[in-house]
Length: 77
Image (cartoon, rainbow, N blue to C red; front, side, top):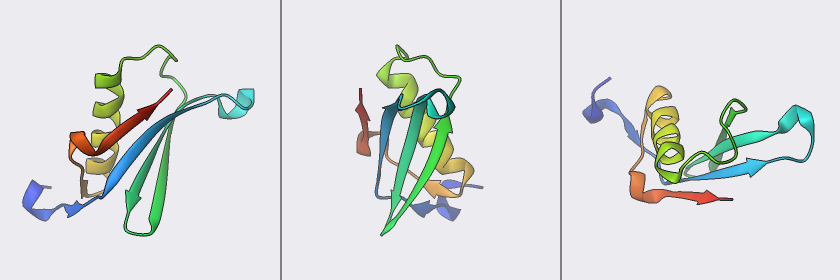
């Protein structure tokens, strides 16, 4: 898909989840209009750098057909 074919995504937040062993790891919350799409990344370490986490969010969005501006990604540790 080219960027001309991608639908715009509003923003994303990458959040560390550690409530329990089953849901431990980074999760990308992609905001598209009123919808929030979640992408888990349990294999990413807690100390993963912000630039890599932003790249994960942009890649997740692109894989689902959305274009996400890296500047619209917030990392919450």
